Structure formats: C-alpha cells, structure tokens
Image (cartoon, helix red, strand yellow):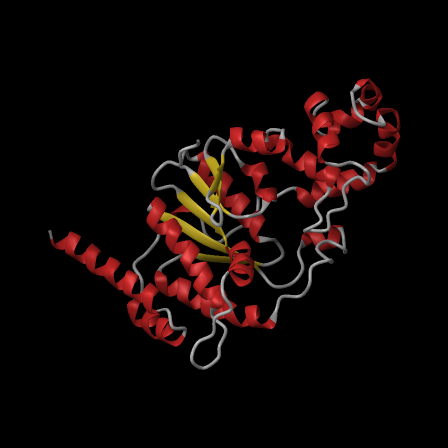
Length: 304
C-alpha cells in the first residue's frame, strides 16, 4: 500500500466535498432552522486531513459560480446536472467564512473549474520537490498522479499513486485523458465515442497508445482481440472530432494564472474572535472546542 509522506501540501477539492457532505451526512439545521449539514460534513472531512497528515500548507478550492471555458467548447458540458439545491447554496458563504477564520487558505477562480486550479497548483508545487496530496472524489484527477502527487478519497480513505491508478484503470496516469476521450464521462456530460466502453478503450490504449497514436494506426485495430474490431476503426474515424473534443473537455488545465502560490498556502493561526460567533451560530461546538484546544497546546509549546 502506498504511503503518503508526512506534512504534504494538501489540495482539497472543496466543491467535491460540498456535494458529498450534502448528500452523505445528515440534513442538519441549527436552532433558527438554517441548514448546516454540509458545513458539518465538510469540516469533519477537513479535520480528518489536518489531524492525519499534519500539513504545513493546505488550500480548499471551490468552483466559482458561472460558466467556464469548457462551456464555450461544448455548451452541453455538465448540462445533465440538476441545479444546486437551495439548502446547499445557503451553506456556501458561511462555510467560506468559517474556513477563512480557521486560517485555511481558500481559492475560488472565475472561468475555470476547481480541478484546473488544483492541477495548476499541484504541478507547480511538485516541480519544487514537495509532496502533494489531492483530496477529491473526482476520477478525472487521476491524470495528475505522479511520484510527487497522490490522490486521497476522504470518504473511503482510498489512496492512489501511479501503481494504484494503473491497477484501477488498467492504464498509467498519462493515458487517463485518452481513456475519458474514448468512453466519455456521464457525470460531466463528456460525450466520448459512442459504442466504446471501458474494456475496449483499455485494450486500444494498452496495445496502441494514446489518442494521437491510435488515430495514426487505425488499420492495426483489426489485429486486436476485440469484439467487432473491424468496424471499430470505422467508428473511431467517424467520431474523430468528438473524440478530440472529449479530450479537450477532460484535460485539466495546468497553467491557470493564480493570485496564490505555494508560499501563500501556509496554514495560519485561527482568528478565534471571528470563529467563535460563527461556530456558535451554526452550532459547531465540537469543532470550536478542538480548535481552542489546539491553540492552547500551540501556546504551551511556545512557552517551553
């Protein structure tokens, strides 16, 4: 099993956390009937990360409201997703305020997705030799995995390094985008090539290579032990534009211009005067007690 280096830089997919918390944890409300379940859930998952991995640097990244460059490429991108529930919308701003008061860096970048911000930061940080842990439930992120970048699914504690990605998907991280370009992604409404499933895509990629190599060697497909191999080359040729569109949609952007870099992601001391009333309003007594105890312990260490 892969071991995560202690004190990694943790990049949290805040949008993934929000939805998972909202649909997984109880639908809690406070005494004034304000929804709080997603807030409690996100903080619980985040608290686990902080205690388990003791990061010196961390950021929680959320999707900005509005469309992104992918909607310009493909207007139907994510069109099958229902609108965000009102009870979840109401918890976003309070959650932002609580995280900032906790000293946790927060990033929300317009016109791109949280994935793109995470991808940009992960590569920038990994190049410097620091270990990066991306906490998400999004399979698209597997394309970022390397010797310095690992994935963690907080809900089931699954950790993916390069070998684990290969074991799970049958291909290395470098071919994850190619896989998605062929099979598509129903969650994001990425079309892929109709009629090509995961097993067929794996055989194609394992034997021939990525999308460019695949299209340069369509004649070789007939030699592979794939059901309907002779017709497969025709299907791919007819859907070439869709395959490459899907490739663009599935590719995480890693050159986003950001206002924050690694040095800005240092976990800072909580602003207890701001945090205390927020925790009382949203009835986060346990969270507040843990943070106050942590501050007290840090002060005692400084006095020694």
